[in-house]
Image 1: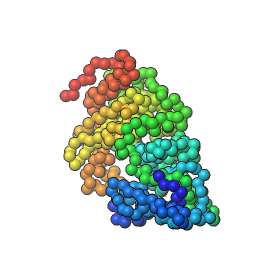
Image 2: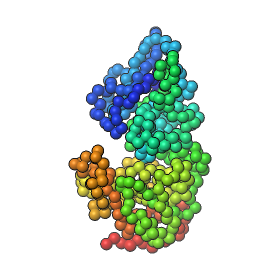
Image 3: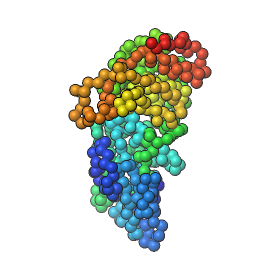
Image 4: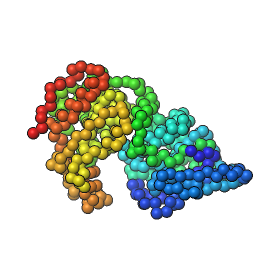
Length: 395
């Protein structure tokens, strides 16, 4: 956290999803200046586990740096003060992907502000740099940011093109803050966050006007329908097989056709989610405590084996019990002629991780859904909530 500091923002210096290996850590689109009393000698210093320079600086992410300048002089008269007590400078990672938008753009803000006791739905000001419209697919990315910020924050998101920074003279693009939080990027979904995800989802439910403690009153299985790559080829077959086998409600839902509030509502009445891996699976984060999710693996071409994409995330979400459906290479369908030009087809790991569709073996899937339903039944104290006869053994 930094005190009485001013920011000036410019266009980001890298393209979306581009990660230069910090050849020059001073190359940045952010100028951060401390204005200290002329007689002050309390020069602030910053460090983290990877960089321990004596000079003051703050790191946002592995390719975006803040190198503060300290000026021992009064604040310039053309400095524009934010009217928020606390602000957060957050790097937008990949907002067009719903999972990254939620887990890497907004969860870190919540986590860091909460750790300082500064989380405030009504007052917290969030500055996204780069903005959503400068990261990949602007329409989809900004739609995700708008939905999430509307449920979490009373103030609108700021960026270098909003009135906070793009004000008329004499302010000249400089905005100053009493309390500024930076360095949130590393606190995203890849950071150990036990007990943080459930609290974050609770904030979303409160913002949506929903009962944060609501729970389902019967078993319900939702198959998350993914459009595009890594989709399931036989959704209808899986839906019919699970409904017949377990005698419970089964529904195929495309999250892209629902608003965020509608997703939150739908998940509150769901006990088991079945989902392909990737961003679509993040709807399972909205499940109530005691529920379960079955995630379909991807194929790891480096080791020729099935692998989990979400394991590190759900390890730290103690509301949802995860199960992982293993794939075999014979289950996958890869049409290399349909891959975009920017995909390196020599990178077998990238290709097999992100692009094949899958045909689900319904008998194999039944075994994992059985375990998921049983976990929900025990968690909610139900009896005979689904047909309990043992799943058909694999052949």
